[in-house]
Length: 140
Image (cartoon, rainbow, N blue to C red; front, side, top):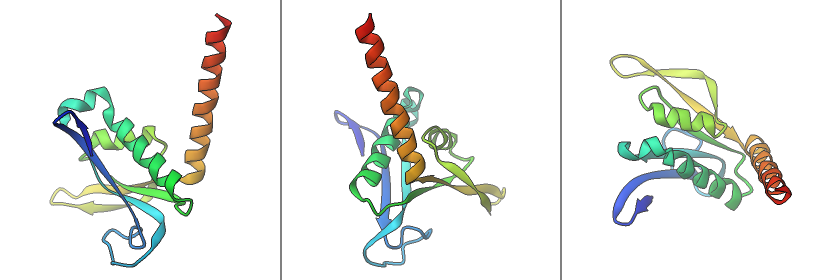
């Protein structure tokens, strides 16, 4: 949960239990190699600051960093939540080709996935950029 003082900003919940690779938990025991983002929400008034990206980055780092067994993270990807969809894309999540239709208007809802390998490549490029930026600062 993300709070600023007493104010609720947003939350994210990642499930890495054995049932996480399924849409609903089957109460299996032990960790899974696939983690699932079950909840991801940021209050609307804080979305323009892109705080949702920081929240997602923190959760992904925690999931991949704390458990070496996790190979990928999955998230529901819906046009009904454009700010989360944009945030997932920015973080490197890729949409799977299969989609489900839901609701009376038959909205297409899919799943986006971030693999550990893709995340590690992204982290390496971020670190390289930081090093380049540090080098430029010392040259001035």
